[in-house]
Length: 191
Image (cartoon, rainbow, N blue to C red):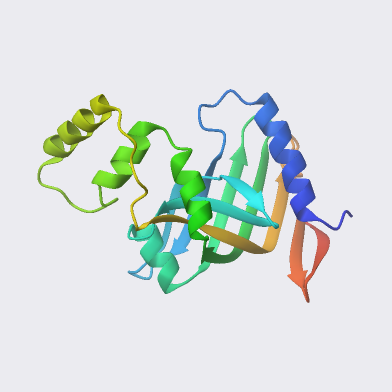
């Protein structure tokens, strides 16, 4: 069994990106330990892998940011329709450096930048129309938007990665890699 689950992930990811026609092929489900002690999951976008860590972005003052600050043990779940593959990652999240946050923020489209600068993601509002109107006005001015101080991202260092290839027979091929003393140990697991 190959020893680097990151290499396997990158090979599978490239294949899915080549075959897929979905609008957001980088979508991944991020699961956290909720502030109310219930698991919490939402879809985010994988930006890239740096030094074997999975990078995601978003507001630090959003629920996901608050939950990660409270408990940085997280999970990522990828489901790829074209190749019928699932990848589950468990790991430790830490805030990315400011320069990297700047890079990702400035790569976003104008509307995404404006929404991030105007809104407190997930917070209640009593006047969504005025926020939308402000967004449209700012978009029409086409001015550069600075990264809000609470907008950043997380680097997720994996400790466990499971790969599953679905089979028509339901005898799915599953491999589990776990980080032990700084080295990946892989094993075949039952469907």
